[in-house]
Length: 207
Ligand SMILES: Nc1ncnc2c1ncn2[C@@H]1O[C@H](COP(=O)(O)OP(=O)(O)OP(=O)(O)O)[C@@H](O)[C@H]1O
Ligand SMILES: O=P(O)(O)OC[C@H]1O[C@H](OP(=O)(O)OP(=O)(O)O)[C@H](O)[C@@H]1O
Image (cartoon, rainbow, N blue to C red; front, side):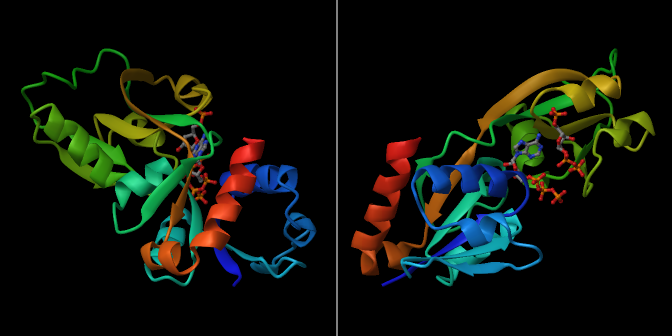
């Protein structure tokens, strides 16, 4: 039986291609893909398709994909039903809380607004600090929001720290580490156990 693999497109796609190449999967078509979104491996063992991270989780949940490659950030944000079976150790970054210097956020007595692409993560984080904050959902360029006064601080991903630095923001707190994970549909893990374990073994060997 072949395995359907949902790969998060963008940064994680590039890292996944490198790993799959080392594992000697047939990914030539995926490497030179143009605008195509679905690829069949010549061996017929694997079928790959490219989607946004949150959609990769949806495809895995519904069993349309047996396996998904998704960032831990996206997994924490939409914690649903699947098995998380492997840390690929790529796509490493951190969730951080950041603001302009001299902004009181933690311990502030006033009404605090937080801009973020990750409302669930931000809410959980401030709940753990016993703080009731207003969350403002932003789709991208999150670092801009405190500069323009939309919010007091942001919860976002930091990799090199360049985006924060170039926009004059500082890290107030590190929330947790992030990396790409392999998730598996629960029913597929039973029905295609051998195929999925073979896939995981091949990947594990090259990490
Ligand atoms: N510097 C980084 N910024 C954002 N995500 C990163 C970074 N480094 C690794 N990642 C991981 O890559 C995943 C995909 O991020 P990417 O920016 O490619 O897509 P995206 O967040 O959906 O952005 P877009 O909406 O621009 O496609 C993230 O979920 C995260 O796990
Ligand atoms: O610490 P750095 O290495 O600078 O990386 C962090 C930046 O990368 C991501 O943005 P992305 O490039 O995905 O663009 P976006 O703002 O449109 O989400 C993230 O949201 C930060 O803005």
